[in-house]
Image 1 (cartoon, rainbow, N blue to C red):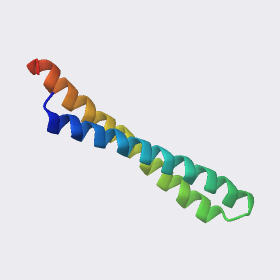
Image 2 (image 1 turned 90 degrees about the vertical axis):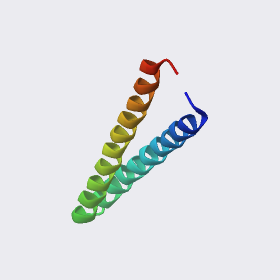
Image 3 (image 1 turned 60 degrees about the horizontal axis):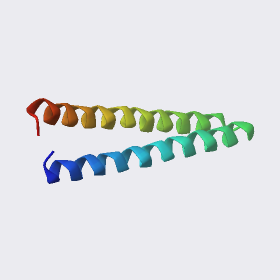
Image 4 (image 1 turned 30 degrees about the vertical axis):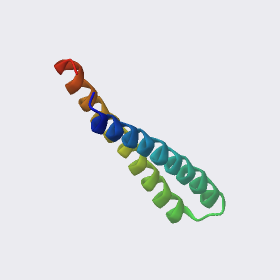
Length: 75
């Protein structure tokens, strides 16, 4: 795999960690808000957490496509 593509893959893996952490934080805060009766804010945080989890899936798909493309080419 060319160096520039390898650097891109590393950056994408870093994004996964960031989005997973943000999703976990959002869920944790949502639980706190819900206990405090702040249901609307809790729901908003759950939506944002879901968006971060979706972004993780998208980034993993991009990484997979990159890796498949270079495995197929033999690079």
